[in-house]
Length: 242
Ligand SMILES: [Zn+2]
Ligand SMILES: [Zn+2]
Image (cartoon, rainbow, N blue to C red; front, side):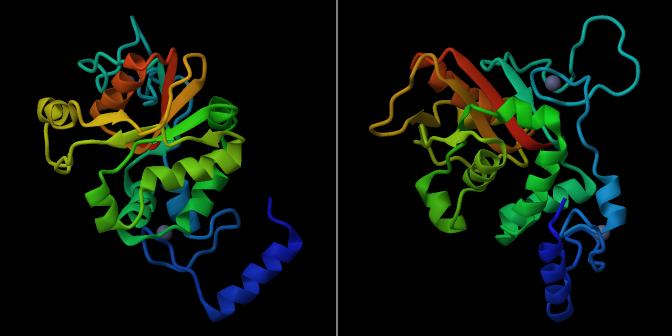
């Protein structure tokens, strides 16, 4: 719920600088979101229980027999649990792309509103130590920022958690987008280490943060480093899945 003054200010700003939906390009008319129109906001598929406990993907339709998610079937997860906010398709995908590839930090405000609307997601994050999946320094210089860091900072503010840069990337890896599951695993194997001067506290409640859960290879490689360093509780959270 926005305060009256905020609404007034936004209405005045819209007259000067109209906002457009990051997915369809139409002008924005949503009362809760600044960069999604009503139609596109309605199309976002939010994860609602029951979900896969490993990757957070929502189970659709009736569940019979043991719960096994096809996304996690070959993962052998080294983390305890995972959660996502929405499926990275359609407008959800556009929001994340705007952040990652177009420096669209403003979409973080809309994602924060979505997080606040999900009591399940906020409860999951609340009180934890958030560890962003790190970028290699070369990639960081290329992009200028780490999207996982941006998301972790937003989540820390929205859900009362703290951010800790506990990991560093030791290997420059090619983009995972076009790799299959096995190649993704090989690509990120031994790609991470504990950051210089950082220390894992065995009893801390760690959550690895990334923008999207795809095969889980990257998050698993990060979890392995934390486990080897003695971390007992390791969960993961992403915004999108897909
Ligand atoms: Zn739209
Ligand atoms: Zn799963």
